[in-house]
Image (cartoon, rainbow, N blue to C red; front, side):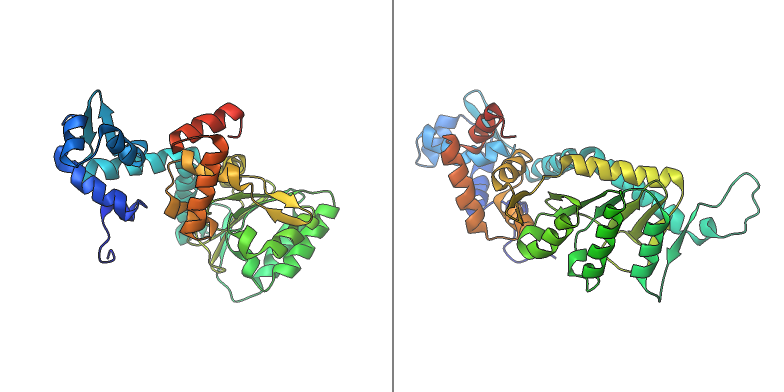
Length: 329
C-alpha cells in the first residue's frame, strides 16, 4: 500500500513542487502557453523554466505555442517504456534465464529417470543444504579451467569473504581470470573488501544495482540462487551448455554497461561525474540516484548542480548535450 500523501509523480521520484505544478497544469492541457502563464500569474518564460523537468521527463510537451500535459495513465506508460528501454537486451536475457531456471528447478526435469525416449534431463542440480556452500563452490571452481564471472550484489557482507578472496587469488595466480560486477554502493559500504579483490587480481566494474547473485565458471557451470535473488540456499547449479552460455551472454551484456571504478591509491572510487551523466541520460530522478549511490538527496542535487555549472548548462538537457560534445559520455 502506498504511503499517505504519495502521488503518481512523487512515487516516480519527482519533487512535491513538480507534482503540485503538474496538478495545476493538467486542466490547462492544450491551451496556449501565454494564457496558461497568465492564469498562473507568471510570464511565459517563467512558466517554461518551471515545467522544464516535466518536459524532459516527457510528461509535458510543447506543441508550437501550446502546452500538452500527459494524463496519469500516459505518464505511467511512458515511465514503464523508458525503464524497459534502459534495461534493453540485458533485461530480455534475464527473463530468458529466469524461465530457464524455472524449468531446470522442476524436479521432473532433474529426475534421473524418465520415460520419454525423445527427451533428456537437463544437466544440473539444486543444492538445498545443509552443508558447506563454500566448499561445494570451491570444488566446482577448482574442477574447471575456465575464467570466473560474478554478479556480487551483497556477498562482501558474508563471513566467508576472506576465504573467497584467497581462493580467487589462487585461481588468478594459476593463470585464469576473474571478473566481478558490484552495485555502486559497495564503493561506500565496503571499499576495503573491494580493494582486497582488486589486489587479488580481479577485474571489477559497478552498476547502479544488481538483481541477483551469479557465478559463471568457464563454460561448465553457472550457479544462481533458487529463486533468483540474494539467498545462500537453495542454489541451482547449471551444467547444461546452452543455459551456461546464456548466462555468460547476460553477464557480458551487463559488463559492457558497467563502469570501471577509479583507483585513488589502493582505494577504489566511482567516476561520479560519468555516473551522474549516465543516470540523467537514462531518465533517472534525483531520488532514484540517491538510493543507488547510498547517499543523501541533498548531496545528489548539489553534485548535479556542480556538474551543470562545470558544463555551463542551464538545464539537464543542455548538460547532456554538452557532455556528449565533450566526449564525457
